[in-house]
Length: 345
Image 1 (cartoon, helix red, strand yellow):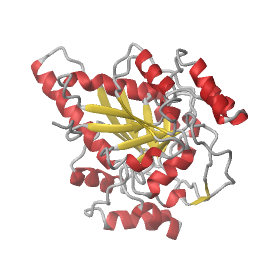
Image 2 (cartoon, one colour):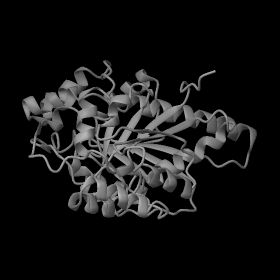
Image 3 (cartoon, rainbow, N blue to C red):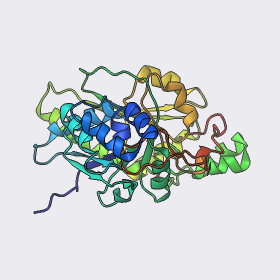
Image 4 (cartoon, rainbow, N blue to C red):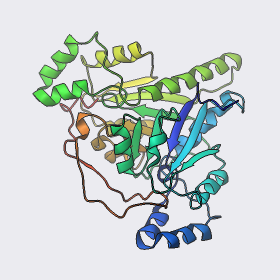
């Protein structure tokens, strides 16, 4: 009987997000593909160092102990531009780090995001911005993993996930209203007038839904084992404030999803909260909130909606067989605003 991906959280992760490919990228940029292939063969037993998304993926996979080993609640699939040969080092590194990942897609020279829908993924993570942009345009839930120097306690099994609201969990309707008016009072009135009408779900609403599924499994285990400590905690960190906060809360309720914490900051710098919370991953649709926190948070940019209208920069050397380079074709946001100093939700 075929292995089913139903009733699981399925995450696709590029090797560029899972591992630190700085050295591999540098070699690829300066040598031929055949030399690069030999380089990876020579280093096949040299384990790749963890990348920015590694702590998140490692802890997410750790939650598989909530169900039997033949029925994991989390499935992580490597999506790579490697060919199967150069991809061997990636899977060797997966094994060396004892990550419970057994499935991978190696699509030589092709962006593997085409397969996100085939695997019913709730999230695709990559350090290659052009791949994330393309996946987002196709309607897939994708995030660009930004450089980070955050350090996490390897002995701590807890997993803290934080989301921005508009353009991430919710659609960008409200942000468009503000951009058209550039008037905070008018924006607040619009939100108050529409408080009972939920926003359309955004690109990562299904991810939150699947994380809630895992939290329910944790609560069930807690009911059986008094000493069990809940590991997964979900937070909302938004620049919305009263009265606009209510529409966000009502939207979450209408979608049937929940968060443990909600911060309605009204323009206060998000990094102040992130530094205290120290989430293992934080999703935001604007890099202006991610970059100030890069030393203590693994930040993921969700290039969705009106805040991410882009212009395209000249292409760099194309990638056909190697590990996804981190120097890539990178659209630059022409508008990366704060939505009324408060409403980059």
